[in-house]
Image 1 (cartoon, rainbow, N blue to C red):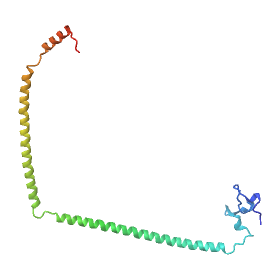
Image 2: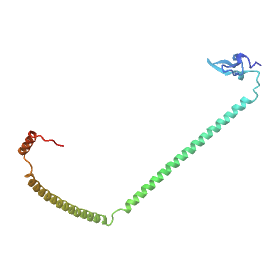
Image 3: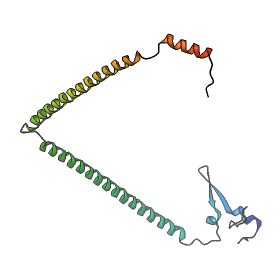
Image 4: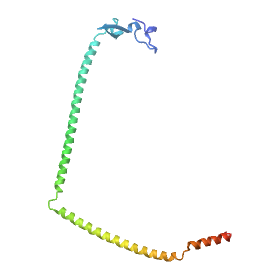
Length: 181
């Protein structure tokens, strides 16, 4: 058996790779395809025993179990989805039914709603007429007040200074400056 401490058995990281580099990889050409296998698989000094066959058998069993599990999972997922769809359909069907029942319950069979609508309309029209009358009264009162205000303003305006008088006062003030403090 080869020594594990030789320089040909160590990788660049300093750890041993297990076999010298020459024996680490062996190449086999099959159908013009280059394949590489690990050296220890082909090493005649290592007794393989029944391990590879057991491993293959175990992997085959595992793959069969995985396939079975996948099918079970898919079946459960499909059943859940179908159940959700059924619940969704049932819920919406019940909602539609309740809505129809409500509409049927609120159907006007005695023409009472028509009579109530008419009464409400008449009451609203009466209130609107009353409100319009009040607004007209307020507008008329405001108009009267503004007319009296205008009359008073015109009476006061006669006491205001005219343009000529204002210019004369400004001219006199400029001719006769007084100290203002």
